Every structure is written in C-alpha cells, then in structure tokens.
Image (tube, rainbow, N blue to C red; front, top):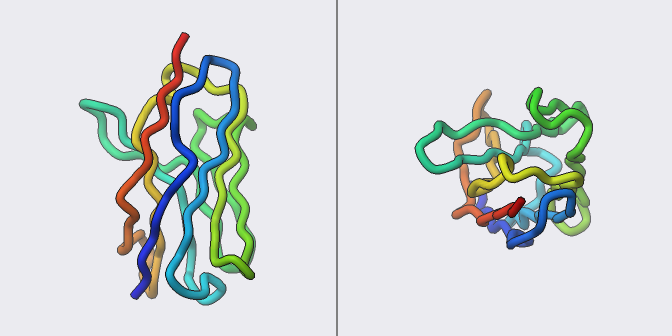
Length: 117
C-alpha cells in the first residue's frame, strides 16, 4: 500500500509554469510506475505523464514537450514540471501509482490547476 499527496497546484496565467509534487508514504523505487493524470469538468480522466521504475517516460499527445515528469527517490516524490501552460490545461491533477498492477490502483486526492487566458 501507499498513500499519495499532491501539492503545487494553483492559478497561473497562460504561458506560465507550475511544478506539481506527489509525496508518497513509502519508497517509490519498487513501484511499477507512477504517473500524473488530470480530469477537467465534464471530461474523463486522462493520463498526462507516466514514469516507470526503469525510468521510461511517456506523455500524452497534448503535452507536446511542455511537461516533464521526474522523481527523487530519496524524497519518495514524483514531480511534474509544467511549462507553457494553456487554458485547456485547467483540471484537477492526480498522482497515481501502479503497485503490483498494470494500471494505477492508488491515487492522491488531487490538486487544482487553473490557467487563465
């Protein structure tokens, strides 16, 4: 099991940057994969970025080089650096962990990101 807590969300103007953090309650080195997901009002949750235990990263097509996922194993934390933010990036961002699973089975409560035009 693992508990996840996101932080770093907020309000930013279009073109700005934010860095989200996901703090885990235990070591993340043995977790199959960790990722960032988002859900906008009236839309389904979608994957933003994913980082496997082996270091492989994948991004949603809409990211287009604007976001970077990374981790600090010593701090049990995963980050999402978001640059060149757009109003359509507005959503609740969730951290998810694949613990012995091919898909996320642990979630944080989410952090709101609002991008104004």
